[in-house]
Length: 520
Figure 1 (cartoon, rainbow, N blue to C red):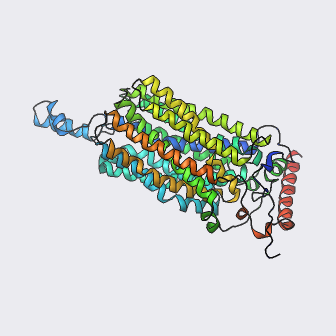
Figure 2: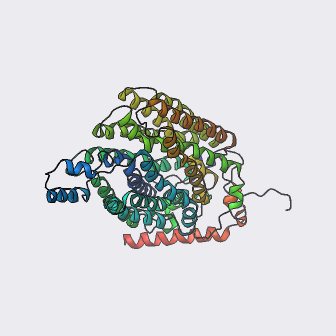
Figure 3: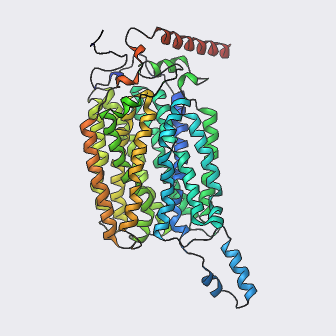
């Protein structure tokens, strides 16, 4: 009736976690949904090794520049001998480059330019074609580019390498929107914290892995820094194969999922359980204060994370005088802490929600504040100590706390709209990366080439942490924990949806028939 408030199935009256006590219990054992989460974790792990491979190897790449004067001064005075030595050294894939800090920042900057500009288009593609296709393209393209990258600067200098990073950034823009799209369909409400956290800790595990790889390879004369790129490319092709073989865009499209698990995942009614093309409700998304609250928080979180991700190896080398082999070990420890604590926060989040101890909104507020504010204090302490072990300890605590954002604004994107989590993620990631593009600019303009001056680095860290505090406050004010009405079509009001239910039941029956045939 006119003026009557629409009631939608699955929309809680408040922020209570109505999916906390599922009518259909979880199937026992390792299910299909767990396989999806595991493969997505592997894919994100590998993607992050390629995302961070240049940052962690930059010290080795620019460790010693090959110049004509150096080449000629160390060889015979014979003109022919000198020329031969120069030719061999200058065209070796293992050579190093004399790039100043500004040039290095421009190369690193290129990835995030591509990443940011393609974020919204990739969100739209993921929404239209499902999450599997964009992820598979990203892994394949990144694998190819990673393998050829060591040869590119030999022929086209730093601009060629920057172009490679631009391409990698453009394709990796698909990852988070696509994974959010898939998690919105695969992660049941009662397991959302755990499954989502499992997947997204791949970013930390990938960072840990690349730091170890860089420390192992970059310091050896046989393998050298190019081996970092080659190994990452091989891993990318392997994860591409796993994705193609084991993953389906949604539970209904998986050929071997059991009827029991399908019913368990789709019982809440907040996620499409059957094929249906939907137009993304951009007007509702762009006018939602809850969406903008998490978008702003996303920007603050990304700025702090990107600062450490891209600058920590340089900071450890220049300020704390840590050599490249030890640098790889030290630099990986904060991400190990983040990886471990993220899983812990995921379990705690689900426990509090399933036991109805706290509302969804309050869980998200608390987790986000731990991840943005408490972690910020320890990040400030990190840049004011001069002992490597103490700096690493403070950074480990900071990153461990920062992992709470996985159960803060990050999962809140799925809370608001499981059906349109991908586009919301693409919006948040685009704004976050536009903001984060300022980080290398700030570093370049404040630190400049005075890399061994700690006071310049301290200014950079203080600016970034202050931004985290402000953006978290915005999230705390505007956060909502309930599924928003625009997650659904008008025909999905209570009392309708008979055809959809029939479609779902038909699909369940078809799966049961397949199981009977398989057992006969």
